[in-house]
Every structure is written in C-alpha cells, then in structure tokens.
Length: 258
Ligand code: OOG
Ligand code: MG
Image (cartoon, rainbow, N blue to C red; front, side, top):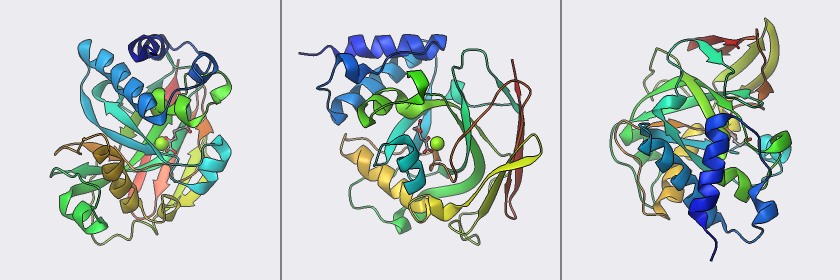
C-alpha cells in the first residue's frame, strides 16, 4: 500500500521551499490519476493547516498546443488558495523555481455548481462575473518536465495568479473571440484568443464541474476559477515587466522582482 500522505508531504516541502524535485512517478510508477488527485488534496490540506484557505480552482492543459508542448494530452485541475493571489502588481521570485506566466480568464461563481451533466447554460446561471487574469505556473519538477500523474499531484503547477480590478458581465462579450496579447518588456511574446480554451472558456468550467463531481466535489459560491491558458506560457526573470492586453477589456500589468 503506497503512502499517499508521505508523497504529499514530500511535494508540499518542495512547494513551500521552492526547491525542485524528481518526478514522483520515478519512485512510484504505479500511481493512478485518482491517487494523484488525492495527493494534490493532501498537499493543499497541509497548506490549509498552516493557515491558508481554498478559494477556487484552476483548469490546465485546456488547449491543444499547450497539451502538445507539455506532452500531457488531457485537461487537469488544481486547487487555488488565498496565498497564491497577488494583491499588488508585483511577482516576487523568492520561493519560486522556474516561473512561467500565461494569460487566462477568471470566472467568479455565485451559485454552487456540480454534477456530471451540467451545461454551459448552468455555468452562465452560476457566474457572477469574468475577469482578465494571469497565472504564474511553477512546476516543482526538474526541467518543468512531468507526466499527467506528476503534474496532477503537484497541484497542476499552481504557484501564483493575479486578476484584474474590473469584473465584466458574462454576457455581451463573446469570450471565445476575445483576443489577448502578452508583452514582455514592451515586446509581444504571445497572442491568442479565448477559443484556445476548449473552443470556449465556458466549456472549461463545465469540464471542471464534471471532473470534480467524480470526486463528489462541487464549485462553491465565491470561488474563482482560472479557465486555462489562452497562449503558451513564457518564462520570467528579475526585472521583467509583463503586460497582457485583452480586447476591449483593458490590460493587466505587473513587474517581476527578486
Ligand atoms: C500545467 C499547468 C497548465 C494551463 O493553463 O494550461 C496550466 C503546466 O503546464 O505546468 O495552468
Ligand atoms: Mg494556467
């Protein structure tokens, strides 16, 4: 019987200290996807025991190009906690390993959402607003390299995220058509559109609800959901300035400091 708690404690230690580690599948080749999500939950529970709080969820690997880049062919989810949210436009590198940034859209949910037969309509009924967002991912694994099982156990590479100040109505905007440009130090480094996220970002929330329901979980009122990257992720280092422009929705900016 594998000790999932022991594996979780090891990953948690690397998440907290920002030291890279070997893939857990090297020492535990028989872990299942379910066990990997169990490890993920145990890691976040350790953070919660230290005073952190679960505030939402993220979807990852929701675009084909991103799946191909990372070599993992299906969407995954992760857990977002309060300590991951940047409350000022500064990303501090302390405690991070090899951070990458990616443009996202964040859904803020006002009604419990769950079940394996939910539809985009159910998601709209449960959505308070949508905000531009940027996720900072930082795999704890060497060379940012992992299998599906590894990345799920490492909380889908969750590290930090920032959301815009202005929330937008879910209606009046065709979220799949929103164009996004990401600038690093004034130069465009990535462009994309909302459709990169499973054809339409709302589908990512549908998929999340379905995946959670397999574990008896639901999305809670007040939860924030990062729907997945609109473009490939870009590495950042000290001194970088990142700006993401969202068609008609303004822009999000932050700088990277030691
Ligand atoms: C996994 C997390 C991917 C996204 O939005 O696709 C992700 C990774 O690439 O490390 O957050
Ligand atoms: Mg992401």
